[in-house]
Length: 102
Image (tube, rainbow, N blue to C red; front, side, top):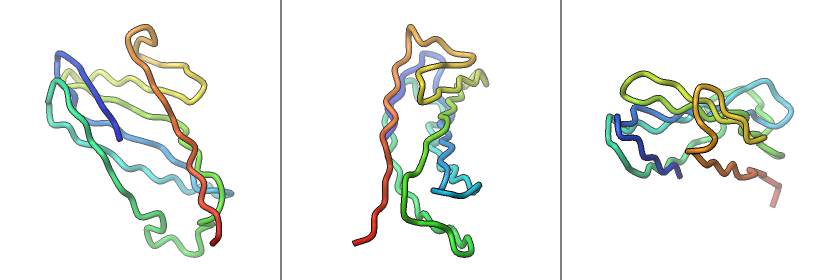
């Protein structure tokens, strides 16, 4: 779930999530279409037709990009760093995603 607020309006949020033990990247996104505040939840199939993906293990969210209606792009990383944004005015919590066999 992503909750956003920006006086100029938010266009999209894009996530880069790596499959376990793979170079494959899942890139779900939330389209906000210019709202100044809102929440978006998404669900994503993790196989996407990839042949023999490694489904079990730790999925790593490597970055989250936020684009506003002025086309400013801020990129957030799990270590707390931000590029083209302000860590003083933004907060980010990146959860761990782990899938284990039943």
